[in-house]
Length: 282
Image (tube, rainbow, N blue to C red; front, side, top):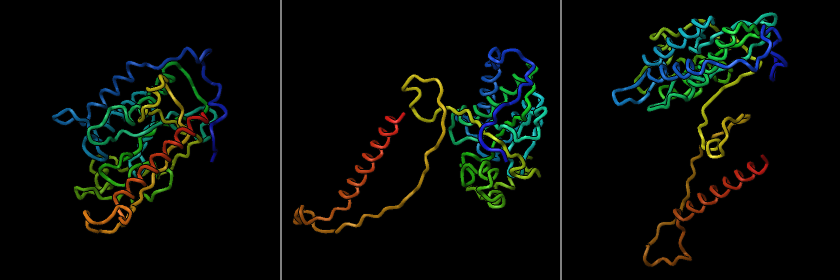
């Protein structure tokens, strides 16, 4: 498997100046809005959980747009969608993959995940309409159950694709309504036979709305993310000593609440110091 970013997509563009190519912004925004309307409840909240009817309608819309753009759509066993634009002379080489997810949390924004999927589709469709021909295949991916609201864990489709989570366990994951992901994928028509990981990309790009305040705060339009935070959960028990509140001197007290407050203060100060250190290195 090739690693890293490919040296070139190939020179077979059929265009003299790639800098003159611009995507169809109105088409992209129109699709984002239309997909954002799929799964709205009576109060206008967007909720498109994995393998629900709303998810099926969202998938159907993406598949239709991809096929209209001339892409071949394939679905693997965990329900991940892959819209493929074949390359030219180097089509046997590992493809470049662009994508994200189209399932949502409860009361979601319409850009989270969907922006990355639909932007990738728009890039390919624009290049195709302009007569470009890349040597290397490009794939737009929409991963299943990335949010993990209905079935745990989250990032499930991409984890199965990457080989870090077993397919069988993912399909057997049971939701709070008693259904399994595998049975619901079959119900909505997105349980297919393509082996998970049948594509092995040389590089992956995901355009994503910023989920923090940094770019907006600093007036920057776009940033490149090269790492993500790791999350670990701990349960900490602080044991004090119960005693009479009125007669126990402060110097003899073992107050668990006070100890917990000091721990919280220390962790907050540590996080601030580390944040300032990283900012200084930039």
